[in-house]
Length: 96
Image 1 (tube, rainbow, N blue to C red):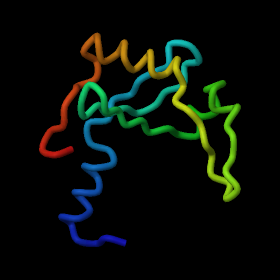
Image 2 (image 1 turned 120 degrees about the vertical axis):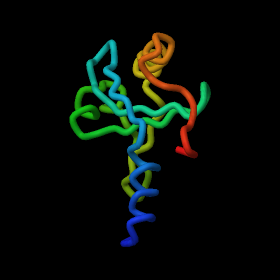
Image 3 (image 1 turned 45 degrees about the vertical axis):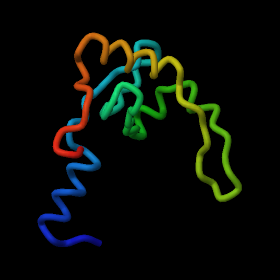
Image 4 (image 1 turned 90 degrees about the vertical axis):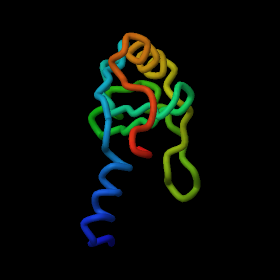
């Protein structure tokens, strides 16, 4: 477990800096999104959002129990719309 202030700050920047909340225009699931480029999108799901998304209710499971799923096309369309409207900044800042 990292303990140095610099490492903890790097960890915070990598995992949560510049996240923008986006709501799916279909099921209203709210996720945190970061776009480092036009083609690279990070999505942070929470339990509430997973419960709203019908795509995730159909998840397959690997033998070790981890969920396996494709991206939800309705959420992807919602993120693309938000990025197109300028509500999600595109591009990494300071490497994050």
